[in-house]
Image (cartoon, rainbow, N blue to C red):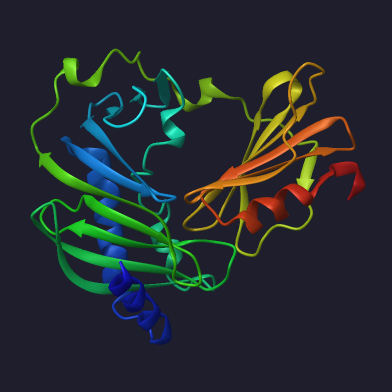
Length: 300
């Protein structure tokens, strides 16, 4: 790990190399994770705790089906089918690795907030990989080092770093089998996929964030609970969900922040009537700035 951090810091001092080639790898990885069948065991390190998760992923025409089954700690699992996720029991999505790649790889080119570069060759789970570095230029976002399978373009390992080069979260396939589709017994009983439009309706926002962290843009405003709203703010790599909901008399409120690995949460009461909470795989300063920037639109 020390060697990896030193390599990261050395790369920060030099110019990005092969940015176009790195983007091509990320585009391939994005397609591979949606189109390929695979199964394997992922080990996950966060806050000094090492966990293991068994994953089965099938790329069906009506939406990918996926099941994550915890192999350590309390029994829990997460099933996904299209836009639908079913938990049984607990909230495994907060304990499971973020098996993903940047959602807009091409937007990283020329970004004033990131640099991207090829970072050499390696091996993960016995397979040759190409490593890619996406490095942050400030403290409002994390960077990633990704290890991408040279044959299938699947991401086999990921480490999230802060601007200081320190790792905050990492996961890695300890073993993986690509190509044969998992059968229904491996995927559980998740229901049919739910179209995104059926999950939440777009609404005209009554709120805005007056002081967004640089590089983040509003992507959507969705209907929330009890007449509340859910906002989505993203940069080319990360997204933050902002929840603005009426305060319920019998519900506990969230005040202050917490962090677990790369996942940061911050909440506060707005004028004593609204619960405002931001959640994202970003540094704590990012979610805190977003929450404190929430104002009613008639205050603009």
